[in-house]
Image (cartoon, rainbow over the protein chains, first blue to last red):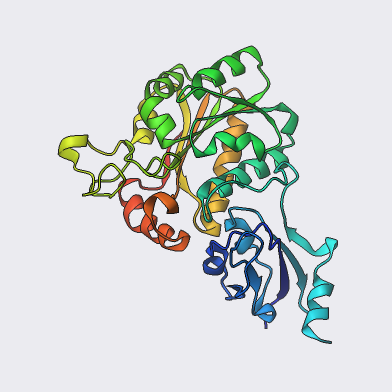
Length: 75
Length: 257
């Protein structure tokens, strides 16, 4: 069991669906959505939310700074 | 407890570990998906925020994709003629000592048309920071060959790959700069993985600290991608960069005095 539990919030309208966060995520939490946003991009979202450890890797590599990361100690 | 309510519980202000810095404006960036410029802008904005120098920093934006950098980072900006950012930065830092002056230039701007400017600014050892983004191509104008284009690399103007017998060799600007006695800190970084972004941030912090201590010129090259120019997806661009760019442009600090 991971020591931390995390969650991310993606600003889906600003996301350009580059997929760099998908590759950067060590626990494979993020996927590109089937739906598209207003600009026609497949935005990133938490597909496997339980696995998120709030490590901020996705936020660091995001070129458009659309990811906000939250983390709590696992109880 | 359902999964959604659990996530909603985590998402609250006191649990925030990473978010957009206030130095970065809310404007949507015009860069292509996956462009390294976005990451570098973010890193510079975060360093400015953490050092508390937002009202003392003056940036000089180049000609190229990053000409509109002033729309994204909330500091004072100037915009230079093509390649002439070091000249503007020289004047600014000399006239306004105590300010943190940096230039932000691409390889078309710094290595090609602005080659003489940067070499003389470095030789004079001006008290500025230079961010040099090297993606081995002219991104804004449609992916033509740049001085930094690798041998054999296909671009709009080298459709059969760069032939060094005709066009010369890819230029290692950072190695040239490191030889000059005026420079204090010369490093080559990248921004494709979380670890690389952290390293880049440390280098940027050191560079601005050098400015504060009046140490002279700090030069940071960032090897980046241009997925539109390279005709690859953002993820494939990063792989191509690791395989090809890092072999010719090895990462690391060349000079730290």
